Amino acid sequence: MAPLAPPGAGLGPAEPLTKLTDPLNRWSAWVTIDDKPVEVYKVAHEGKKSTCYIEAVEGEEFQLVFAAHNKAGDGTQARVCPEVDGMAMNGVVFRTETPWTWEGKRVSDQAVRPFTFAKTSLTDDSNLATTSEAVIKKLGTICFPVLRCLNIRDSTAPNVYKDDAKQHTIDERSKKAAISHQAGFGAVRSAAISGNPVHVTYVDKEDSPFYVLEFKYRSRALLELEDIVEPLPRTSPSPAPASPARSPKAALKSPDIKGKKRKTDVITLSDDDDDETDLRAKVARLEAENAKLKSGGVKAEKKPKVKDEPLRMNIKKENGQMVIHLLD
Image (cartoon, rainbow, N blue to C red):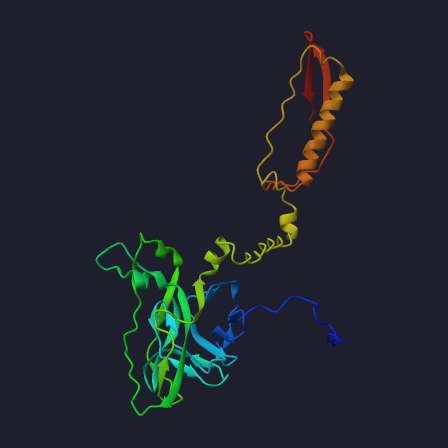
């Protein structure tokens, strides 16, 4: 009878995948930034290779980690010599399941140049661009080729290192110019190596490894454009700040009038305007409009205060037309 799953198992979002492992679970590799494994995307297995994508975070240092889970049944051990953009790092033989970390390109037993994600170096001068197809083909990749070895024995020979790490310059017309990033190498810093040199007998050749775990690193924008990752949620724009409370003085101003004097209305009388009642109604409306404008805050000119009085007028017909006489 199968055991019951623990409470909550299978609920909630799945944990992000951070390791690239072969289908038989013999080896795993991962890339870390600030000691945290980065997420891997679009994992695929074909033939003797497993591949995935990771995000290149420009300017960040990264480290490489590899672990061997199971010993091969043929008595061999795994030897791994990582390649960053095709450049080989120092090799390690895995006799235990303890993971090994590469902090950078080793230049001595006591120092390394840390790996960094750098912007692709482009040029329009073909004379300055890297022409090696082997180099160009591997730009934007981190590989862990696994070679089987046996007859492992300690060595007294010193390790040999080369401080030959460099960032290749790419012709901007090359297809590889679209990868956006490549590996860079920081300034030399202290990092002592552990372990002792060994001699081994290889079962596989360098150019024909037994298996390969390969990471392809790209910018987040490229991963989104190639539908490898989901676009990040876009933050909605912040709401516009509320208008400040209007001061009592500002409240007296009409936003439509803006302090300008109202243009004088003119009543044109025609022969049809001979109805005295209609005429008075029009005048009343005009007065009401003027009163509304005044209450709306039209800034009045400084004049002596005058007592408001009703408009006095005399309306009569002269020569067939209506005439308004304003009375004092």
